[in-house]
Image (tube, helix red, strand yellow):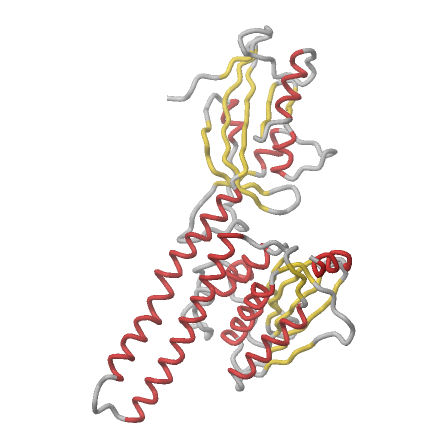
Length: 389
């Protein structure tokens, strides 16, 4: 049974109030108080709508932008979980209308929804809406929303831990146990023993990489990343990663392309940057075997970019969103490309965005892919302060 509608009386007593923006006196005080609330509020009445400052912030609406019930309802999308991970960048297509429902007499209580913000980013809110009956008998609505993006991100990372343990760690651990049992056989052929040892080494390295990714995710969930902690020189990190990679995998060519002049420092954390570049190189090695891979550093205004370029088959059919979403297979059986779960790129996306950067994957002209990320440049004064600190 739906809750009874809220009644807004014209009198100054009884705790009720008119929800008309043009009203004066005590009404102005009430509206001013609503503007200070840490909860987003929109009051919709036949004479007009009034949104408080917090609701505008949640929708990323500039002060001079018109903001009413249509702006709110048009940008809300249902919250849907798809497997162990949810992508905030791919909300369901059908809109929801809590305010319209409230105007029709239906209550919405504490529903989690996606928001397509006005600045083209995405958010998550918990929304409620109730019918508002005014003193003259006309009907309005009260809509409230609280910011749930931080809680959503925490849940998403927690789900990632559970999913990685359940899906990815089981395979290498099982392979290592099987190899250990086989190596214990007393009369095992030397050629077979060498083959098992090679496979054991590969599975051990895979397990080590997965463990590192889990630790990165755990660190990110526990303390986040403060981009002001240290200046990072992307050229130096790229050189280190490429040198380490060349030493480990001589069969896979990697070329380093760094500008001759100085490359400014960026805001970030050295270990996370290292992890992101490694994930991009792993992706290139997996999907463009035999292709020369180029790691290119570009300084562009207030950001420095890292591009990992290959001449493989390009992006999968699902595009960039599929690459960066956990547990979305990167290919379909029989299309010639290896299938996988994209854990490394999922981790890369999370750490890059936590450092205030952006990550991308696009097809290259002439074939292949450009998968990379950009981080904001630290001003020289800020670098000096950090070094002195």
